[in-house]
Image (cartoon, rainbow, N blue to C red; front, side):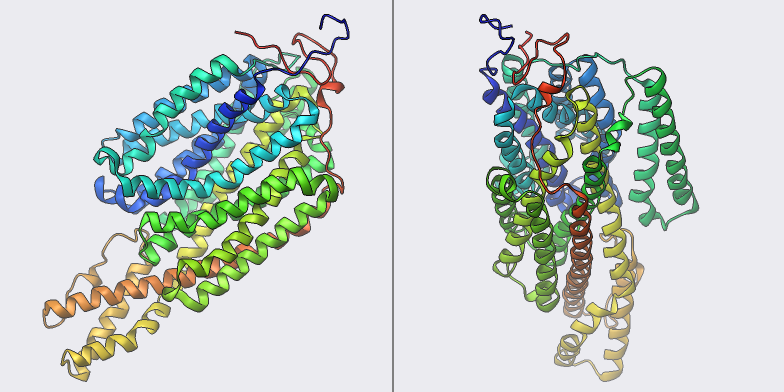
Length: 574
């Protein structure tokens, strides 16, 4: 209560410093989702790892994040959002150190699981703390800034990874992308202790341990086979696990309904889904991030493996998407959404679809002759559309949520995002590598005319040329169908018929070109499907209310154990 007895306190004075800490933590999380992608070739070589193992370095973070995210939101509601945020930042920093000193690939995979799990504790607190710390009139600006972070961090990870590998501080190579988090994490922890205010759910709910176990089990049973199934040829157990995941998640919903009715404080407040905006928004959010997760995964493979670009070249090219995303996110909340409401989301999805479709067309047309400047416009358009969607969608989904359920809603929102990204990686991998496997002759057909000319120049008679071309075609097919693109199939190790070193070098370089053609066409097909899915997102957004407004969540609850009243921020608890 303020001295004048009105019961309304002034906004928390250190809230903008606290916001900086929250943005740094959120940026680190999103950065680490994509920064590993540009280091795949280096990790493969340094740790003598198979390609499937490096896939787990990427997937492990996603799985750990998704598994603990809902729990993290509820723990913040129960034990304090600042406290859980600090635990998450501490664990994330330790995990980054473990990643940076990993002696082998299996250790690195385990550390990435741990790193993702700690993000699952840290990230759900961010939006909840923002809503609890800032008065209503400032939340639009805050969410616009947060949207800008979302719009730039993923692509910025590609740039940061490329720069660190190019700079190679201390000769650390790929390890520097993890070790850089350590000083940042320590600094964020110190500043958070001094500036971030503590807050809890007024009802101080108890943790639903059975609900936690069911939700974690269901998510793992769904995501694990989606990540592993393609490399193993989709064995029967992968489908059994996914079917079991549906049953476990259904049991989770039934249990949560019973628990909420009889004991209260479930992991997920199911009544949230009675709101049309929340349910429709979550469905669209899942599909949106499925498309984006798949795009980022295949994009980095295309640029580095297909085109042979350096990590820095690939990372700098991604700046067009990052700039478009940051610009779109900033303008959407502050300028467009208050005036045009749902039309901003619709425009964003449509622009994203147009950008992806244009990008696919340019790649299919140019293939290996493409340059970075030819990608800039479609990437900027896609990024701007991404930004227009991502910032106001967060607001549209959470504005109708009571403050006492902010942690639960934030956890569900972020879990949906992460599960969407995991689904995107799995599904785009199936589509991308499946197309290459089924259409390996595309690259061969593109390169054989030049290969025949070179063979003629080398003096090979027509009969010998036919044998070389046949062996070359078999090699490309076998390499395209392998689950590990870095492995050399037996058909590619037989050498040239005459044992000529010059001929062997010619076949190797031509094989790389054929592989590049296949990667380019496969990526174009994948992005084309992404454009189509963005049109589905566009249609789904019509279920969102026309007007998107930030409700005064504080005014809807009575002051309780927390010193919170209308329009105020919680008092810091040191």
